[in-house]
Image (cartoon, rainbow, N blue to C red; front, top):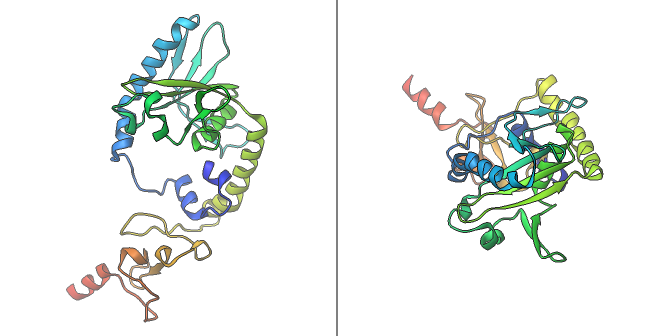
Length: 255
């Protein structure tokens, strides 16, 4: 969501690929594995820290929330917080791999999403970061007005509250709606195809989105798949009108 809001020259094709689930699997990335492995530990610590401050405090696991009037907008908090003394709130948990051996207070400068408020001299969530956008969306789709942002580290954690900003959300929702109707709908209803490079498993940009030759792609006349130039060793415009990938060339030799 944040890419749509913050960057007016964002390449839309890769974003559409993300929306449609056409991107590469990143489950093997160490930072992703670390975060998922420690999420329950972080949730339990948050519960232990907050429970003494409330009555009958609990954190419920939750799934995907879909906005009823705009079903193309959805969000999945890491939990819904409730108690007998406060209104329900969303919970977002982060377990940064970069702080595996350092407390959040000591290592917050390694995290783009945290900043020091000069007035209060307290850490807070950076409102320019994608996680702020993420939490605003979570509160919008759940109908809640407050959220907890909890950053876990085995050396010392940190939490801050984030309030729902209706003005921010109105602008965000408008841009998400425009993006969906202008770029996602054609792929869903008009049979428009996303081209994914077989070499790197990443989407190929449309011609008008290409800003340098490294982003260019070429069509194999045999298998009709698109390849990034850099993935097949092409540095300049192909000198021939037709191009065939190495796999198709090898198959032709075997015939």
